[in-house]
Length: 334
Ligand code: KG4
Ligand code: ZN
Picture 1 (cartoon, helix red, strand yellow):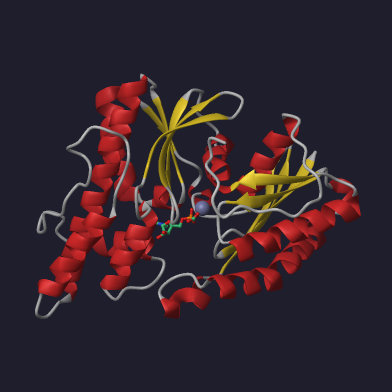
Picture 2 (picture 1 turned 90 degrees about the horizontal axis):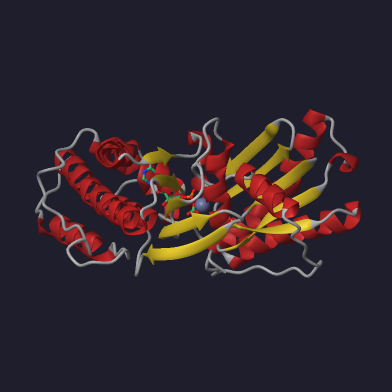
């Protein structure tokens, strides 16, 4: 069985094929970052238009290279939400049209479930139950995950998502979009102890996050400097990253303690951050918790995670009609 996966929720057009026997056999991602960079963030209309340009040619190129035909595909998975509505509609329309033409099911996938299940594509997949830390450009969530794809939301961001905070701080420092990888690189040259930025919502009990206060603290520091040097920028990046990461680690530790679960899965674009991974190692060592990450190339948005999540849904008997429906907001637990 082979499933075609289509991801168009934000600024990456991802197309991939998951094969039941061989795993991910194709995974192509076209990133739009160059188109959005000059605006310092994703412009939804530009994103939708580029998905229209890229989705079908990417599918065609994979089919030509792999010498595949419609008879080889058993289902078409697409990201049905959450994300930018226009962008999601492109992937959903392509998936439903091909599904109708080829006589196969279309399978709407939750983007964050895709991120989460990508961890199962490693050689050492996590055992259920596990706590998932989902940290991307649109989400910061802690979720208890049980077998049969049952999810319980434990906590989430009350304002900015973790990746969004990285992107906004990068913008304040005059750095490129997306900010996460740029901040991580710059932080390596900086002193993470120079600025004592807050670790929001860590002193109060609870598993929710808030990153806007941290972002404001960084903005105030930048505004208070008369002339900001590259060294200052590196110190701010390092101090911000340390605060964000420590906050995330404290919340993960709490989620594991309160549920008694001993497995942590970290997914979403921010999971590519090596400083975060090093910090989370502390939990692994002190609390005897096993931590799992998706393969590095599957941390950020891609079609492979959607193809795989679609495969899992199809196997569990999921069905939908040919109505084209997407959701900008969509709680994973539902
Ligand atoms: O999961 P993703 O590719 O797209 C969404 O679903 O949002 O995540 C993108 C987010 C961006 O905010 C980006 O800055 C952040 O993930 N990101 C990182 C790193 N790589 C990507 N944040 C911190 N460190 C990184 N190395
Ligand atoms: Zn994502």
